[in-house]
Image (cartoon, rainbow, N blue to C red):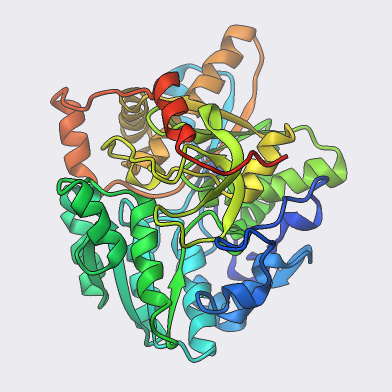
Length: 455
């Protein structure tokens, strides 16, 4: 067992293609709609915001897309990432199940976000872009994009959700060290931000608001483009490097997962590890289950509605067919800032609607308890977002033991919690409250959306 505790691939074994699940989905998602005309959008409608190569990837139906050599070269500074068997955690639990985790915290950003930041910066540079604007919740995405932009000689303006800006000053400083300008959102810098502050001067902000601010700046300058760290098809495409590696690594262990788990904000973390394994279900008849885990305070998959909605608060993005709590939704100030988003990616939404994946919601205290247990056993302090995946993995192991069976469980440990010490401090002090969004609150949030349900 100890010989198989850690599996690291050689550079030559690292996959050189991303996987596009659109090619294999039985039911293709409905098209995005133009925010004004409400008609299906074309590539030209996105050209003011994204470089053309990313637009092509967004709509591509090719199963595999080559990773550029320059991107692979940067990937090799931290990839392939290790797959661990959680031997010590298994001992603590006394479980008969096998628990594996793919650790994505070993790069400059401390999270999986680097996997898409690098290619996004690369494609923007290739098309002559000079500056990128983006948003960040907990700061992992902003950190990843800051380094990538600096590497490719691009300016970066980051709108960071205000509650996380105040909770996590270390993330802001890391972005500054990589040369990025970081602005707390909502800000007075944009019309979108000023409008929010007029209504609520003490607004904690949201990813939807920060997206609006970043997009507003981007569309005003032909040499500036916008970049998103989750939700969109091309972002999820880039993250499949995680699952493609994990497939090879699991083969080396002689095991295969009965269940694959990822925490859920917009979809890139879960999709990155799950989609290559889901391909094996769709094409080869494998029977793996796939579980997304979201906060009970932001339950778009478990309590939201599948319908067309904006990806941002101001209504600048295309209308997307997705599970949503409404683009005006302002989530509670939980510490898993990367999970505080009102909507779900189109691909995940369609797959959940069709029954190919499962979704569950959890309270943050239970998740932090799981994170601390994991840290004691495995030695890695997980990011608050990743504790949701850990808590679900613990559930699966305990349930299997009660049923008298042994399962092979794989989850994505998407990042470390070194910049989240203040959250753990509040947990240890008993000052980390639970919050569950009620049915009435969900209904109120969704009732403010004027768009019809997607069928």
